[in-house]
Image (tube, rainbow, N blue to C red):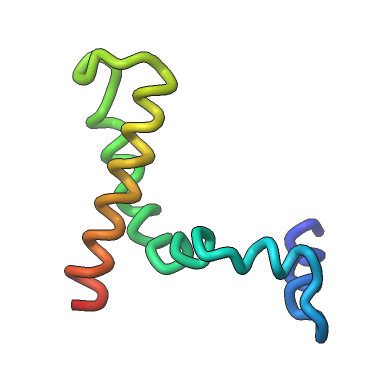
Length: 82
């Protein structure tokens, strides 16, 4: 139900707050690489664990997110649109 409301809000004749919020460049850029993020996040999260890195929760989380997004961007430019 919430998803339907968000879609309707984004497809209105005059863009509202939801459409403007979803149109910011970081979200648009994430949309371009979202499938690669989906593919790479779980193997990286399993590989980059606390035992291997020695990092605490938040630094490890930042490393995992950064590595996932970085690999997705490289994959997008090398594989999807060379």
